[in-house]
Image 1 (spheres, rainbow, N blue to C red):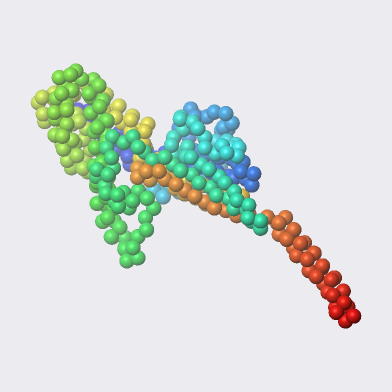
Image 2 (cartoon, rainbow, N blue to C red):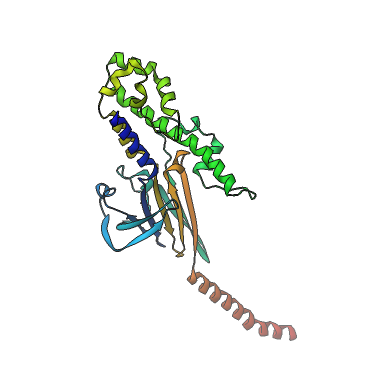
Amino acid sequence: MKRNVLFFMLAAVLFYSCATHYVVTDHVERSLNGTRTVFAADTSSLSHTLYGGWQCNALERPLAFDFRTECDTMKYMFSHALARGEWTIVDDSLSRMLNPQVTVNKCFQWFTTRYVYTAVFSGIDDLPVPVGQYLTDEEQQLLFRPLELPADWNGADMYALLDKLNTKYMKWWSHCLFEKEMEAYAACCDSTQKALLNQYHDTLLTLVLADQPNEFKSIGNVATKIPELEFINKINDVGFDALHWAVDHWNLNTRVLWRVVLPDGRMEEHLVSTERLLVGDYSIEETGRTINWWACVLTLLLLAGAVWLILRGAPCATGRLQS
């Protein structure tokens, strides 16, 4: 019993406070070469992913950033030079939050050159329970994507809506952990025990989800109410397998401040969080323009030459008319 209580205490800590924050800056040059810089609070989450041209440096002065829910201090900087056409780094060891499909294009427009930067973050498609089982498409958009509120809304309206959606969200999250915990138990059971688990699946789920989101429960907590499932609490450390799955696959508190610097020097920021990926792929796009001064000068010279030819030829034409 203590093991199961500890498991869900850890699960609650994971959900509410174990946030992983990064700051990523993609700096694009006129040649479409560039540099990706990753700021992190520690090296543990990135040290195993380093390869090739990645370089790690400890910052002399740590940098503080606001991730909306909380502030975090970045102490380390990882940088990697990227050649034209290689903005998408193919490395399975990188988190999906740090490995979007990035394309950078430019279009010559004589006086200006337009640069278009697009990053597509892959949606999370390996969930044990679809989010749509608890939240409608509209509710998912409201909860997970940038929100545009009606003009007459106030703080109380917003609080009531989010409180309702958060209750559904927490039930969905607990259901996901429940399914992973069931898989872990089934792997440790014989055929007769597996049959009993399947038989009481819905009953166990109902007991686990009762009193959500105010109380977390594991299968071991509620199985004591069913005599046929006495064997469950004799299996050790199963709950931690589900917790490790949650940590490894979709830490719900991962947030990345993704910054884009195009050749015009303007920097734009986008906060990309795991929740945004629950609805599907999430895209950000930025457009910048640089002035082609050589084209401006050449155009002025051509115009000046044309005016000079016109003025130079005007007296000759007048003289021919008089004769």
